[in-house]
Length: 105
Image (cartoon, rainbow, N blue to C red; front, side, top):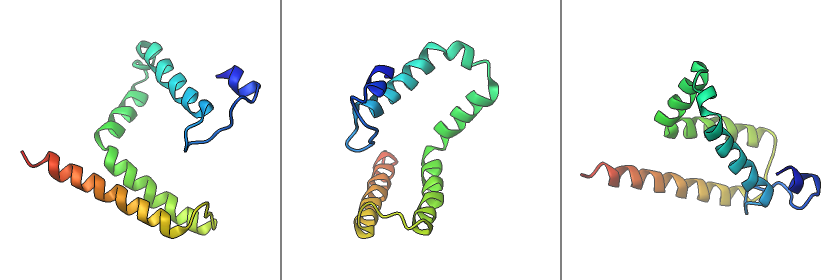
């Protein structure tokens, strides 16, 4: 990670995922696994992780409620707003369909 960053072999980009973005994710994941016995002793940290895990969909919608007004307030438009709304609607539709299909048993 440090080599790729210091030699500027890649830039930071979430989509399409760049080498740096993927290495950050892997480093964080493997670091968490490696240091889990020590991290487990920090009760506030483990309770936060468990809370986010149990309420992931609510956290996702909550962060969208915070981010989208900020994007409009800052006039941030990397793509057309129509395309963003279409993609967001598609994501919500997919999540809703998944929830309804998984509760069908």
